[in-house]
View 1: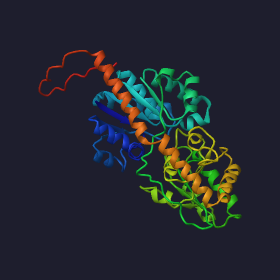
View 2: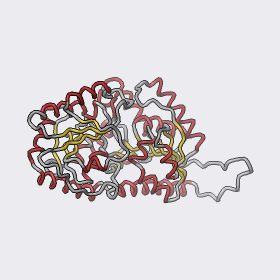
View 3: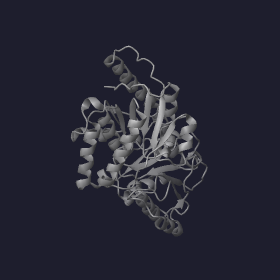
View 4: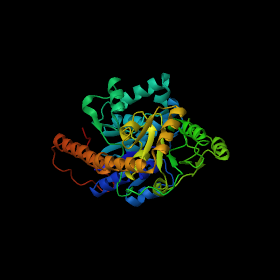
Length: 395
């Protein structure tokens, strides 16, 4: 089939969906990515996925401006005429779903997170809920990454029970993120936060916790890795980050194409996020046998089994985060190693990306079968020169 994937950046597809893209292309599907073109677009094209540029504002929350996004997505779908649309990230799920529904194209959204609007509540959250309900109304299935999001969407009547499918996050390539021996840092415990520099990711709480712990554990290191200046209303400014570095409480590592060596150099990976789908950074850390400290919120709690492969803390609470990080320091190297090994086993059992790929294959096969049944017709005659073949609508 001709599959169109829409998401808020080519970066997202390359970093989180490479295994899925390669599997679908290997199955003989033709893939088009409708995304804002960035430096990762050539990597998609090298995999065999054609890229169509989508102009969109990732930062803005204006329904008026986003009406233009709906028009652009609908125009692209009319031009590309895909058999199925796969949606990821909030705006692409909402406006991609609305456009696909309008054109009668099957839409398979993946709810990877709820975003700032849901976290803040108010009239905007109410509007987003209504948009979700309309966008997902005719979707054959809706993929979720944690049971909390399933309960929220079902409780508010945004999806039907028969639509719900649960995925283990984005899945993880356990060969790309191999089990790795703990670093030999002696008494110096190295923490690593991997995230976009956003308040919603708990970046401020991480810096505050480091400020609390630094006097008692002067040898400990508190590293931060991820993009700065992200198009998001909760983005941390460069000036604030420079002040933290100058104060000596954190080390900012910038952005990298390969996080593997940085995870390998860490004793513990931390993510104090306010809410997630299932955070990829925690899957990567656990796959590499690193213990985790994360907030007890939807998405994070699925990955972290308290006291087994990591520790949980309260969201928006720097003091409780510092408590969990202090507990991780005082646990010592052997206990951290054991937690890391437990995390690796958990990933191999529950979060291998092959599970995600097979579930997408199952749903696409089901759609292909329903099309064959709904359209029990002889093959169409060849199209006249210069005219594309007529498309058949999939029920």
